[in-house]
Structure formats: C-alpha cells, structure tokens
Image (spheres, rainbow, N blue to C red):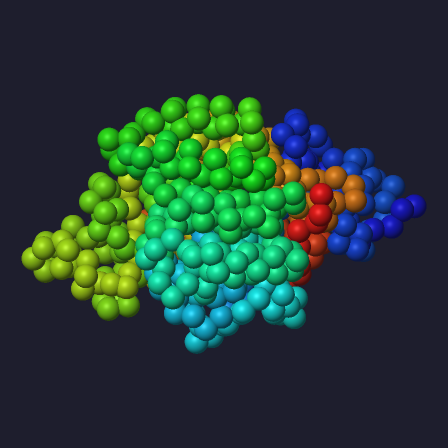
Length: 479
Ligand code: ZN
Ligand code: CU
C-alpha cells in the first residue's frame, strides 16, 4: 500500500495542459504531486472527498503589483481567495527592488513605500521573502522605470552611457538573484523620455539567457501598432521572449482594433516568441491622468492622498458637486489613482480568446477602492467568460491561468497537475465559481473556490484563509 500525506478523492482533474478533463484521485506527498488516477489502494494521512469538484493547478497571476503586499500582508487573501498560488511581481516597469530609499514618484507610488520597505538589491528583496514567506509563491521582474529613478538624476531625458552602464549592473545583479526578466512602462512619465535604444541597451544582459521582457507599451490608443512594433523590435533584436502586458486597445475611436493588434502578434510570432497577458474587464486602472480621463467614458477615483473622501466616487459626480474645470479638480486630488472605463467588450473577448493570452489580474493592492480585478479576475474568467459567455472550454480557461503561464515564464515544476510537480492545487465548483467583487463593492472574495493548496499546504478553505504561509520564492532556472 502506497502512503501519502493528502488524497483528493473522486474529483475531476483539469491538468493545465488544455487536454480534456478526467475523473481521478490526486495524491500529494511532501508538497509534491505523487500520483494521479484510481488511487483506492493508497493510504493517506488525510482524505478529502472532492466529488463533483474540479481539481486544477493553482492559478498563476502573471501580472501583479504585489511587490510590497507580499511583505506587508503576507496572507495574500485577494489572490489566494481566487485560487492563485503564484504571483509574478515587478510589472509595468515598476519593481519595489532596487528602489532603495529613492523617491517613489508616480507610478512607483503604486508599489513602493520607502518609509516601510527599502531594497537596494534583488538578493535582499528575495532574502526578505525567504525569511518571511507569503501565502503564495512569488517570482519577479525588475522594472526599467525603477532603474531610471535609481540611476538618473533627471528622468526627463534619455539615459547617458554611464547611466545605462549603472542600470545594466543592476539588471545583472537581479538576474543572478533569480528574476525572470525585465519589465518596461514607457507609457508613464518617468520612462517616456527613454528611447528604444536605451531600453535595448539596458536589456543587453538578457541576451543569450531565458529571461524575458514584459512590455507595458508606450501607447495603447491611437498609436498602439507603432508602440507594439517598437516593443517587439527591442525583444527581437535581443532574441528574448516577450510578454505584451495587459493587452488592450483604449478609446472609442480604437474599438475593434484588437483585430489589427492580434494580426500583428501573429506576424511577429513567425520570427520571435511573443505572448500576452490580459485582465477580463473593460475598465483599466492606474494613477490619475487627465489624458486617460479624457479618453474614458467614465472615471472612478480609487485613492487620493489630498482628498481621501473622493475614493469610490466618479469624476463626473465630483465635477458636478464642486463645479470648476476638470484640470483643477484632478489637480486637487493628486496624488491619486483611478479606474477608467475605456475599452470595448468585443476587444476584451477577442484578446482573452487568443491562444497565446494568459490571465493576469493587474490588481493594485494598496488602492483604497481598488479595481475589482484585484479580487475577481480569475473567477470572472471561469464564471462569466467560460461558463456564461462560452468564450472557450473550461480546460482552455485553466490552461490560460496555469500551464501556459508556467511554460511562458519558465516556472519549471509548476502549472500542471502531473506527478513530480509542486502540489499547488485549486479545488473549485465549476457550476458556482464566480467573481463577486464589483465596481461598487470591489473587495468581495470569489464564490465557488473550495480549497487552495500551496506546496501541498491548505491555504484557503470555507471562504477564509487557513493562516498558512507556504509560498516560496521562485528563482529563474537557467534553460
Ligand atoms: Zn502596465
Ligand atoms: Cu500593471
């Protein structure tokens, strides 16, 4: 008789590969999946009956800004409540490390608070996570915008040769410490002056490695194709894999243009390795910017340091109450963040359904009134887009949240329910799974996520955290 620690009995296994589901038991020993199949001959310390439920790989949130949350609130309830067992941080050019004590100018204020956490190197950031582990596994990217703030005295111009060299040294340190790659955010003020040549030079240490570039494009509106070409040329020149972050097209004049952007990705994939991440909503969220307010059909304030009472209020309502000009109102709220209703449902569905699209929440965990994607992105794909809208099969939805993500980010023994793989598992009810977080009530946990295991440890159950903090730092493995 074979022995194991945990036996999930009688469930329907969807293994993360996209292959059809099968009825099977799953045995776990020492945090690793031991066997899958008819395991009635196994003896287990704990047997859990999961008849009627799906057993899937724990979800991988490939697009997060959880850098500081992992340390500040290590139970990670916004994520583990969705069945997420691994997060990838440092997206959009903004990583908490190696910012150190530098001023977290917007958008770095979305992740950094130097009064609490300061890291000059990735070795020290990962060391802090090793010493105080969170409830989910974590892998990270290093942000180009962070590097600019650290290495340049004026971010309003392209970097000089010695500044590029300083940034390269920090990229090398981060790669040695185990980051999965580098992210850019040329849309944002502190990186707008960067040229493609600067980014390519800063990324030079990635050449010949299996590290990747995640690109928040310079423009996701009228100039989206130009911005995609700029980003894809950089990755192609370096010969590295690329993730186009939170792919979207913004502004009503551009509605429908995902047909063009995805055709461009198809062409680029003939030469290089390009994939996408996407969150399942028609509203974007970031720092408060007038250009975005003007592009959006409506804007909702998520936080404001100058006027905290404005959180959760719409800009048009505030304007009506207070009168005056839009510019003056927005000025009076800064620094602040917002949700922008700025996309077309048809584009969101087309991008989500694209075979190389992974799910990423892009949740902003420190916002007072966050975009509901923070608590709802993964169950929304399973419930709304898969079960209700029938955009793809449940097997494909799980693949986009686990196996595809692990493959593209090089996470080795994660993302699949397979013998020898880490026992990151989610048990959910396919008929009930749904997001409950909304634009009115953004902090509600999902329905139908029954059990979440991280490295074999029960971490979420009965709608609550177990208190376990079984996550590990996932360092890049050389190819
Ligand atoms: Zn971004
Ligand atoms: Cu982001």
